[in-house]
Length: 173
Image (cartoon, rainbow, N blue to C red; front, side):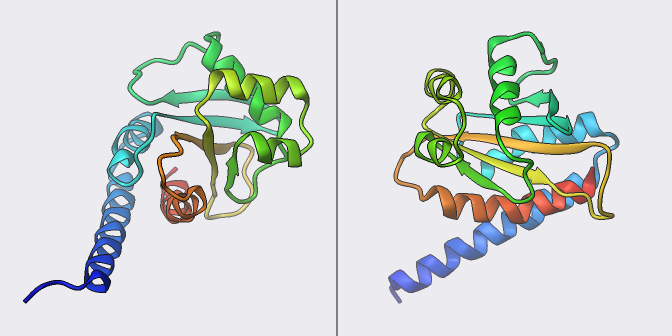
């Protein structure tokens, strides 16, 4: 019996949900935040294909990069970390995830310098997701930055999918 297009779509959605559940469950098995961040940065590729991903730890507008895809140590003085921190500092405090691209940056009324830097240092589209604390406010807030290519995927759909996972990751922190 041949599969219909609707059946294939439903199977793909079920597979995505299964991956979200597995990744979220695995996050709770990590012994410390370093191993959790490595899990988030490197294993989430099974859900969303991205060119680079980072986690930032923020206190107000002051942020540091806590981890980067494929790197065991972070050089806070690298061009990438410097530009990522500058970008985050120009945005409003994230209460929900956002899609960032040149057009959105203009709507957010950030400086032209920030828009130019975004175009130079990052892919054409970035997802920024807060990792929410399950018990409310905390002095430490984490943001998951995911650089994606505009390869036909709908960035808003990817954001919505990642937001589900970000909730589990936030609880695991």
